[in-house]
Structures are given as structure tokens and as C-alpha cells.
Image 1 (spheres, protein in one colour):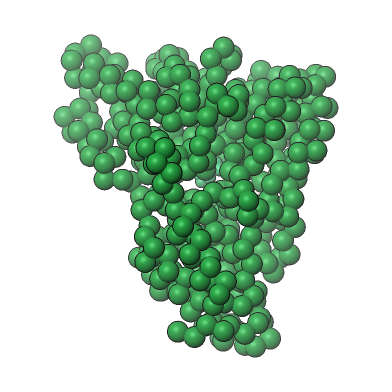
Image 2 (cartoon, protein in one colour):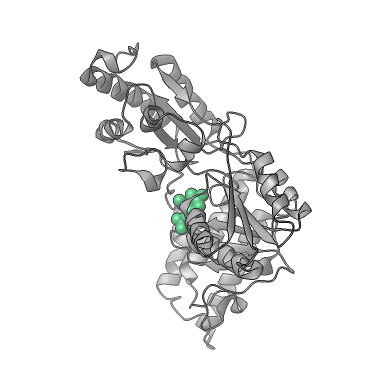
Amino acid sequence: MIYLDANATTPLLPEVLDVMLPWLREGFHNPNASYRGAKAARLAIEEARGQVAALIGAEPDEIVFTGGGTESTNAALKWLARLVGRKSGKVITSAIEHSAVLKPVDTFEEVGYAVTRAGVDAGGRLKLDEFEAGCEAAKEGGGFASLMWVNNETGVIQPIEEACAIAKENGLAFHTDAIQAVGKIAVDVREVPVDFLSLSAHKFHGPKGVGALYIRSGCRFEPLLRGGGQEKDRRSGTENTAGIVGLGKAAELAATRLAAGENPRALRGAFEAKIVETVQGVTVNGDLLHRLPGTSHLSFTGCEAAGLLILLDDLGIACSAGSACMTGKQKPSHVQKAMGFTDAKAKSSLRFGFSCLNTMDEALAAATAVAKAVEKLRRVQGGSTGPVVVYSP
Ligand SMILES: Cc1ncc(COP(=O)(O)O)c(C=O)c1O
């Protein structure tokens, strides 16, 4: 199986598993206890905090470990909503957020917050003027802004620096869902002065169910989860030592890759070039100048993604239609709608996600498989559904 769904999740790196295992065996102690095994766990957690902080240019004390990306976004957004209050509170976000942001924002709207969901252009990049208008309207009465750093479906990198500056000019707190960005491209909170940032280990070869919330030093914060007061009372619950240690190691390895300029851009490039060369009626979607190095979002005229997914699965390729959350559902995603896709185009789109574990042989074999699947589907569907495929296996 050639795994090309790195935006959904990434495989654990062996080095990450190796550092986790001792904390699931002999290092099982509750890190809050007094004996030496517990102290060792506490130290390991602090080392991981430093590793995660280093990856995003933060101070260790600004990192709070959570149970994953969704918890991080919910903790930040629910706190900010409480802080600004619903009477005159305004929320400015985008139309293409992940449901981990969209759903909490929907609930804020239901209870009285005024919400601006700024649109995107055809390439899937935020319309800054709409975002700015929302922020300006929130200047009086207060509010907060939340924008994803990178979109999970298209891999399009958002104008985060500009959006953060606009929010700040209007006196608004700013959260970013950087779950698809951290570990894949440079993210530095010294350069983009966000107040809150969410990240998730499993998107960069760490374990699932563990993430972090960055909280800029000096920002007020009250926790989503209350209880035993762990994480300096910012996130209660006995720490997931193995998961946190795995997140730390994954962060350290990602920082090394980023510093060395290692990324899957060449694989994605070869994959797309071969497909464009061999398949007719294919569109490469998303702003080509602002894409994650490993994401390829393609539409195949006249081919239903659902059918392509089955054929590709048979051919040993794991990829997805639209976002991971939309897989299996036949309606266009909110991201595709916001980008102005027709229903037909939306239904004929696939997302491929390369990671540092893929090889050039895999990229080329996957392109061959895609061409084969498209050709087969068009043949089965009949000539009226799309252009002729020039590739022959
Ligand atoms: C942009 C974005 N935000 C949030 C999430 C949720 O993160 P997690 O799976 O760690 O809860 C994801 C994961 O698919 C994502 O891609």
C-alpha cells in the first residue's frame, strides 16, 4: 500500500515509537507522584515541552499539552468567547476552517455572537478585505479572530501574518489552527505574533490523541478542562507521558527536517507532472504559490471521486476525497463550495498527501495508478462523461 493521505494523519516514525515505549512499560508512574519514577516522567514531559516550544519559536512555559488538535482549538475558542462575552462579542474566522473551529463557532452564533466567516478566492486563499471588514466591525464591543494557517483539504497556506496584523490593529485576540502547518512548514510565533496556536502530533509523525496549545506569555487563559490542576492549572488530567514524549520527539525531528530543507515537494512535483502529462481533463487545485509542499488536490473531469477511491484502493493507493471528514459523503465540502467549485468538480476531486516517508518510486507508481483508475472509470462510465485519456497502461 502506498500511503498518500498525510493530511489525514501520518505514520509514527520509528524513533518516536522508540522513545514512547519505555513510558508505557516501566515508566508508567503518575507524573504527579513523589517517588523517583514519577520525577523521571515529570522531567521527560518538561523535555518534550522544550522540544515543542523550539519547533515554533515559543518559550516552554507557553506550551500546554492537550488531548489533540480538536481539544486545543476548543480550549482556545471557548475561552476567548467567554472572555469577550456574548452580548456584543464578535467572532471573525474564515469559511474554510476545519470543523474543530467551525462547530464551536456555530455554537457561539447560536447563543448570540455575531460571526463573520470571510470567504476565499478561487485558489482557496483568504479574502483579506472581508476578514478586515469583520475585524473593524469588532473594534467596538470586542471580539476575537481565528484563522487556520494551512487548509487541510487543499494544503493552501493562508496569509496568516497579514490576518494576525489586522486582528491586532483592531485590538482583537488571535488564534490560529496551525494543525496542518506545524512540522510541515516554518511556523514561528516570534515572527507571527499570534496569541493562541493549536497543534497536533499525529500530523507530523507523532502519536494520535496528543497535541498542544500555545498561549502567548501574558495572555489571560482559563482552562477548558478543570480538575487536578496539571499543566499549571491550564489543562487538568493525568498527563499522557508516552504521548507527550512522542510529541516532543516528533517535534524535534520535524525541526531537524525543516532546518535541512527536507520536504516532499519534489515527490509531489513528479507525481503531478506525470499525471498532467498522461491524463486529460485534470486540474491541479489551490493557489500554486502558497501550497504545503506535500499536498496535491486534483479534479478529474467526468470522474466521481467515490469511484476513483475504490479503484485506487484496489491498486494499493491510499488517498482521500476532499477532507478526511467528508470521505464517504457525496456532497461538496464547505471548502470546495467557498472556492466556487461546481458540484461536478467538487465530486471529482481527490486529495493526495505526501510525507517525508514517501519515495520517488511511490510517487511515480501512484501517478501511474491514478491514470489507470481514471481511464478505467471513464471507460466504464462511457464516452459522454469526460474527455478521452491519452495514457494507456
Ligand atoms: C486543520 C485541522 N484542524 C483540526 C484538526 C483536528 O485535529 P485532531 O485530529 O488532532 O483532533 C485537523 C485534523 O484533521 C485539521 O486538519
